[in-house]
Image (cartoon, rainbow, N blue to C red; front, side, top):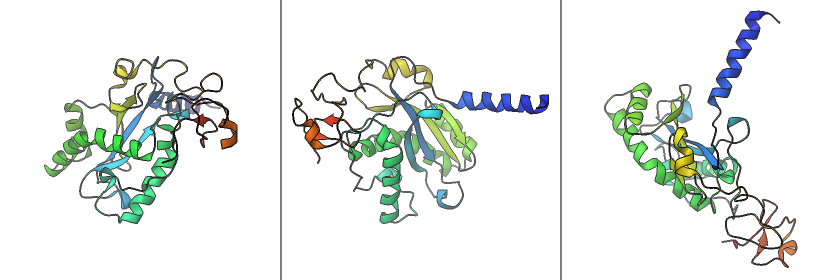
Length: 240
């Protein structure tokens, strides 16, 4: 391997490492709120900015845990912040189901409704900033400057699809909020080491995994457990 190639690999690895999100001590959930500007190609093109998704940065993307929901049922409602003005209701619902299965299933939300309500709630203000900036003639760089000036941290700028990834985290209450990475511990810390781990013994505790299970029968003898969730653990949350 030549020195030039080796240096190239080192630079590449450094770039990858720099992009990996670190939640920090006592923070179990962190990720990015991805907002599309509408300047992107093909299906990313839209008149107004819109939400692409809220993505916990797990595995190679960051140190966030994957915390399963109590209820895994796919969404059946349309989330207004995902409407880019070009897709029909069926296409939007298909996309939301994709986002729920790929990202929402790790976000620690109670269910799909909780996940999408949180996404739309935390995206309202930055989307307004982006829309106002775009309407005034700004390109993606200008929109980014306005978003940062409004107090939001842009963790990554996706120039290929013209999107901004805003830093976000969730505390022990599993409520997501926008926050600079440097403030994750202050804004979202306080998780106990077992907050997302199975509870001890045959007991189900709200917000935690219960005993391991493979069917509802495995949960019948456990206190406060009502069923076996798709995560493979008993839960106290009934199917809605």
